[in-house]
Image (cartoon, rainbow, N blue to C red; front, top):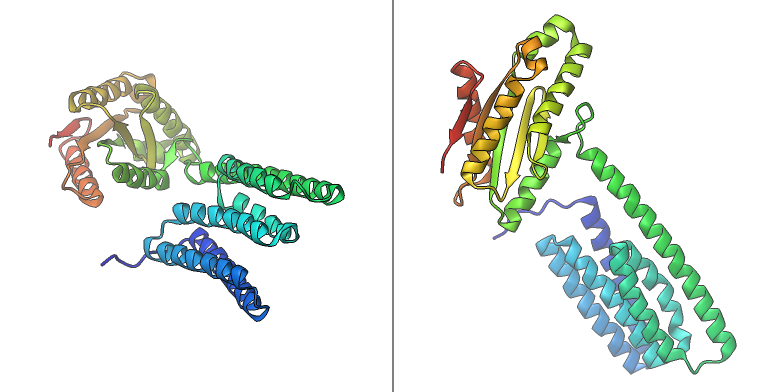
Length: 320
């Protein structure tokens, strides 16, 4: 049995939208029953059954992304079928549908889906009176354009907020949150993961001697040296204080060990390290297939602690 799913705000919003859609179409189905429009009643309740299945799937799996696609496609199909059964008078359902599609999906995917929907609608209403065609096409196009602009603006703001939330304010490298997010994503994709735990030795002495303002500048310079020593595809994370993690993917164990040695050597030879008597204690290890993320991180953290305990200024390699 799966454990309790911790729901995010996005999960709750998507569940709410599915619920509203299901309730609205379901009530409409009862209205069709009262009007004895049995064909439309069956269509409405068919859509209710599908949306209910999506709701249950999302509730159990927590897969917001896939559920969003299902609902967006269902809303477009619902509009197309409603217009096909009842004619141009049902075109008003296209307006909430376009809003829902652009809210749920990434802009490019929403544009693709909605363009297909508009083309199908155009074919269905092509024989309508000219004045109706002009009114419907102009309002639908304007509404769609507004939705496109809003979706791209919202995406830009979300991307900026995500970048800020994943970036260490002082050093401008990735932060602890980004590290754990990336770890979970890499584990889910099955990629091999190798990490280098890094601790700047004697940094506390710099802070005590020069103060926190100068200490922050020294830490920024130390970060730059470490980052420049890494490969372009590697990622550097500041975990807090003077502790960092460099993460490499798709590199052999030998290559990662060589990389760690290069970082250690370049930092030791830097003018900054010599001026402030700074060194690096490092631990290198890759995650084993039968090892959880917490077990792997604890193993690396313990190795880094041993490196500092044994005199610092050294690299500890944890083989498989």
